[in-house]
Image 1 (tube, rainbow, N blue to C red):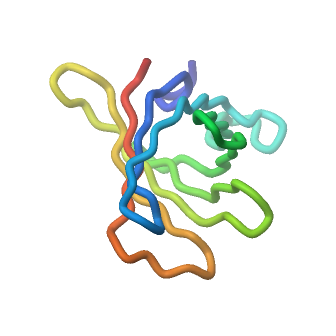
Image 2: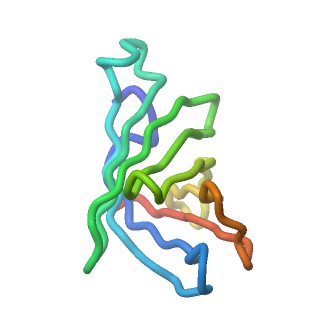
Image 3: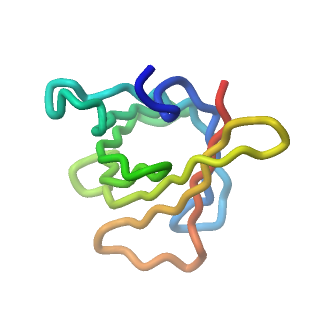
Length: 113
């Protein structure tokens, strides 16, 4: 594996609209078709009772940032930072949604499966 983001993650986030916590499995792969160096990643999340969503972005050190899509009108940007906490590899991050204002401070965090 070329980088530590690649793999499967248990994630949780705070909803952009209503302060409800959600959870999903996120699978991250290297995007060799768009960048043979392995510095661009693709992600796909799958949550109960939801359609799958995607992420795509570039690495800079321990930070992965880019765009997420759930539908053509539900999308935005994200930034995740890898960390070690209590002996586990985690990421902590935030996200925004295009054309929407958050009533809270939306986060999106994950723990390696």
